[in-house]
Every structure is written in C-alpha cells, then in structure tokens.
Length: 299
Length: 187
Image (cartoon, rainbow over all chains, first blue to last red; front, side, top):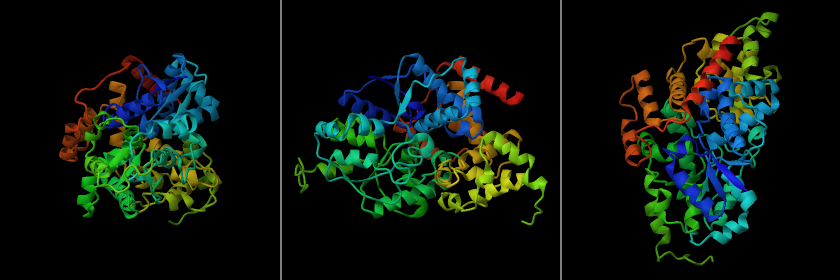
C-alpha cells in the first residue's frame, strides 16, 4: 500500500521538525508514502469560522487530488488538518446537498475513496506495538513524559472517530512501547488556545500555562504532542508564559514522532531538535549519561 | 434580561439564519449546561456557550452577535463533544461568526475576525499559509507593530518561519474562492 502524505502548511514551516521526524519514522517502518502533489491549505479555523462552504471545500479539494492520483489512504500528521479533513468528510456524507455544491465548485465528483489516517492511528492499528518494539534500539526509559493530545485529534468523536474522546491512550501505548516512562495526568485533551495565538495571545498564555503546570506537577520532564499549534503554544510561548506568570517551567515539548525516532536510533540532528525554543538537548544528555542507574536495564 | 416570550421571539428570523448556516436544531437544548462547564474560555467570557444557545432560541440577535463568547471561542469542540442532545454547538458558534462577519457587526475582539480575513486572503494569494506574510498583513490591519516581534525573530532564527512563500496551484485556488463567493452571494 502506497500512502499519500499531506504535510499541511505548518509542517513546511513552524513544524518542520514534525515533518522531518515523521518521514524518518515512516521510512524506518517501511511505510511507502508520497507527498500529495499540488496540495493546498485545508483552510483551518479562519475558513470554517468565516464560510461554511470554504471550510468544507478546501479539504475535499485535497482529497480529490489524492483520489485522482489513485491513492486510497492519506496520512495527515497535523491534528488541525486531520480534524478539518474528517469533519469535511462527515459533513458531506451527512448532507448530500452540501456535497453537491462542493462537487460543483470543484468540477469533480469526489467518490469518497480516500481514507484519512493520523499517524498515531496508523502506527497503533496498522503497524502494531510489536513491530514498534522490534524497531526500538535506544533506551529512553529514564525520560518521564506526559502525552498531550489536544483538542482536535479526538473531537468531535462523531467525525474523527479516533480513540476515546475524553481519555485517549494511543500515544501513551506507543511511547511506552518505545521504552519511555509515560505518566498519567489531567490535561490530555484540554485546549491550549489553538489558533487564538496571533489574535488573543493572553487566552493562549493562560490555557497553555494550566497545561504546562499540571505536567510539571505530576513530575513530567517533557510533553509529547501531535499538533503544530499545540507545539508552538507550549514551546515557543513558554518563555512568555514563565514571564507573565512568574514561573519556572523549562519543559521541552517533543512531537511524538521525534520521540519514536529517537527510540529507533535516528540521529538527533536529523529530526530538527535544534528548532525548539525550549531546548530538549540537556534532557537528552541527562537521560543518556552513563551515570544513569537504569541505563540498559530494560532490554 | 427581561423579555416577553411570544411567537415572534421563539420563531425569529435569527434562529432561522443560524439553522441555515449551522444545520443545527438549537431547540433540542434541555439546559444541562455541560457545554458551559467544559468550555475553556468561560473564565474570560460574558456569556457561556449555553447562554449563546439560549440567546439564539429567544431570537436575541444583538446579544449573540455582540457577545465576547463567539470571538473568544477557540473552536476546541468540547461543547459539541459533550452535548447530550448532540447539538453541534461549535457549528452554532461558527454560524454566529459567519453571520457577524457577513453583516459587518463590530466584533467585541476585532483582532479575531481581522485574523480570519487576513489568513483567508493569505491562502487565496499563495494557496498555502505563508506565515511571515500573514503576520505582516495582520500587523498592518491591527496596527500592533511591536507585538510578538521578539518571538517572531527567535522563530525565524530557528528556521521556523520561511522568508519567501511557496505558491501552489494558484489559478485553481483563486477559482475556488471566486466560485464560493458567487454561490454565497446568490443564496
């Protein structure tokens, strides 16, 4: 099976490290993929907040390209794009009149042949934990991580149909299979403020602070995310949060694919770790130091 | 707010407009307030999502379109997920924002619709979001030239912001935007 790969705008810019690490993991797992030719923006919040048709048509346009190119599955790593694709598919299925309008705009009748897959779902349900465990070569067992799913991977469940909407576990299981110590916490699916970052920054600072503080309180040394917006709110805005609320956090934020890549032994410089504003390098040095008592104890 | 309940307030033109844009039946609301309890921005808002739904039911167009809530909403979909009556409340919020923008209602947080419009213009021009372009255009609209400057520079130095856009299939993107505008104006 050859997959279409839809990076979305963020993975070509603010989330380039998500893109780099995702491609590394896909290659290590032997998953064949190809970037969708001529893909366009999914429209994200500005589209669905301003026009019902636009928010649905832009994702379907991309699916139409994938369908015309003969793909049956499309990998969408960005949680925000993923949710827009799933919602567009749900709405056009529920509402034939809307579907007709979209087809008319695109001059193409979308047949619904392309299934949209988030890599978490792909790794957990297609590849399986057994094969992931077999691909792990590095010991990351000293790293304590909380998994942050954010809003859009699991909501709304009627459209995305991915894991439990209030208490998902897919990322937890995957990172555990990579040998990482995964902690339980209360903010798995709480909102970080998302697209309000450029408009209502204060809201983002407050919501992201709550998330980071809870992560810190349960003893996490890093947060794993699956969404470029969550990453930029928690990582790039972390210094601003520390200054605004007089806190010291220093919590590195990883894309889950970066952690899987590290566990698989991909070189640090190949997954864009230097692109983070809160550097994860001291933590990685610490967990790998020879003085570490649990080193190599697991495998 | 005191109000007389009549046929006119209960079957207002506003509730019809919202239904058209959102495909939702707000009358299903049985006032459990789960949407309000789960909403992450209630700490800052004037009306909760529950009160917005009630506002729609009672035809309170001005209250809804002038509320802080519809612009504070982060579109996190918690309200939609938890509604036991399966009202897609996030889509009702979308509908209120669409109507407010279309009718030129002055937003309680003007920066939010400015961000939407700037982003869409950016997508129409380049086919994909071009972040530096978006930030510059937004600054020209909001006149907040120094906001986030330090962060922008740090992100640029980390190679997270690309200097030039990478335009793609522009003719097709512009055609889609134009066609949608035509359909929406005809409706």
